[in-house]
Length: 315
Length: 242
Image 1 (cartoon, rainbow over the protein chains, first blue to last red):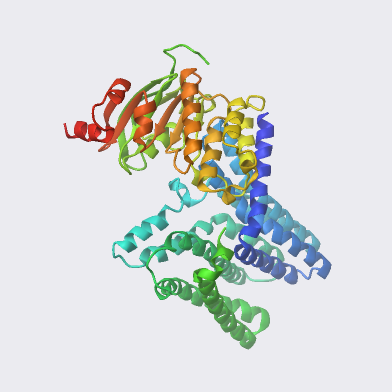
Image 2: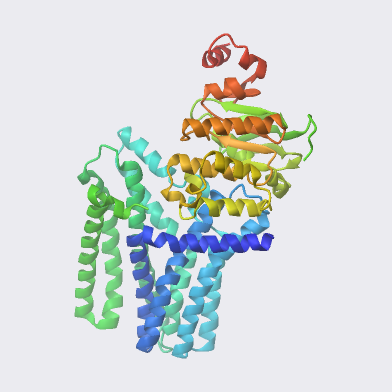
């Protein structure tokens, strides 16, 4: 009976994850793009056949979404409506661990399949598997930092109170920090580094590996920042919708927080791009990426704050 | 379940609740089976924190909680099997239907065949089709009803309700109060309810607890509530001043 309940809870969590895709189209898009970019870059370096790459991309889009949403849903479920459910603490923990680890393991399997197609060294595969597993378990044991309070969005309400009391827009900016920090979990870096470790040619120096790892981290950070923005806009709309703030006041706070990060990220991407496509094209591409990011953020801000389009962003 | 008049469904000893610092301290309660207790107090006085702690959602800072003779800390499974907690509307899972939520709770309580109580409320509220909607498509009242139904899954001896009448239309609220009163009369369960509704307190409560300045400052008995010669809020204000 309890086994059936655990299976039922896992099934419902998966359902929740998949059902939330149409409700969060922008979020699904940016997260899928992040995963696809990682998979394509890995597959490209590994000279994978086009049909295999299509298969990998398809898998990455679906698994990437579940991967990101499922642990969050597990966390919400167990802090929220399931908190008083009459299941033992061991069963409860088991559910959380499975919900967190399972998608990571599937992602890892995908990566190892890529390594196998590429014909990677078995020792590299083993190390990559261990890194991924470690990351998965770290993620399962240390859940979201937003778990301190039963109301994860209380900081927005607190921010509103501060603002109404005449304080600056600082709370809004620190909220975006919190959003990104909540996603910058150790297992993310560990897992995403796996494809790059796998496709690394044997003769590459340790310094190159280190630089590439840092670049990957910066790219991941960029991806996380983008994936955080739609969430952030939604939450801001929830409690700021009726606040007497001008568009300019809100947008300014987003820009101040976001643009410097984009600058740093683009700068980090320069060596990566010059390494792969040459110095001049690499530099140009980095500038283009930076400009593209700024334009994208402006568009997101306008979409997010334009009353006519708000239902599109709302859950 | 014991039907003895002296069967205690909730007992707390020297309980302190809060997050980092205590919000309410030295809470000592003993609720017998078949009684309706209410918790009153201004916003932020700790009513919800107390109920969250009693339902196992928050760990107590200190003290003991026993539900129907089972320690919530040492035997949480047994304690929770005897506990019904109305999940607040904002904590329900957005992308599940009400019926899916209810199925999980019934399954957890192993109460697939024992859903008469829940079924009675569903029919009284004409809520059968509403339960098939996703939670995030439901109105506040519908989500409130879904959370309430979860509280009655299984055969809980203690029902904990946190301002659960908010958002309900008046007919549904009356049906719920009658349903609770009927269960109280039959000694099927006890109710612990945080509320700001003075008519519920004066008409239904067997005991009212008033939280003030970090403690349960006043306890009003059924006699005091029914025989008060002045409005209840005035009586409480007078007691607090004294």
